[in-house]
Length: 81
Image (cartoon, rainbow, N blue to C red; front, side, top):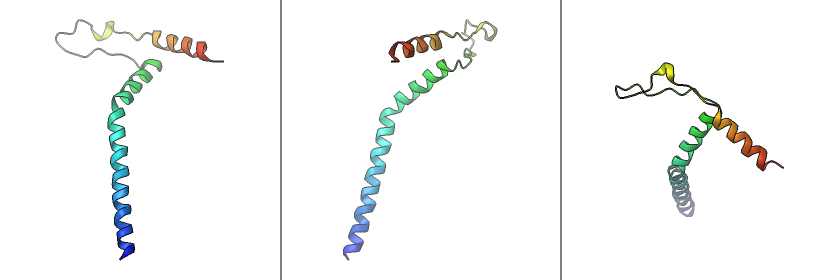
């Protein structure tokens, strides 16, 4: 009987741990999305305007600037020992 109670407690514990992990992931999702966007800037992912009727920028006028990468390298050089 004692063994069954321990198994039940471990199952509850595992569920609780999984629940906390999922909660932490949801809480940090906005940060993860921002990090992905920042990585796209740093790796110079090509920017393309959304194709809508109201868009004033045509795809051939769009360009990707290297300003975010230059700024990131300056910051890294400044904080590096």
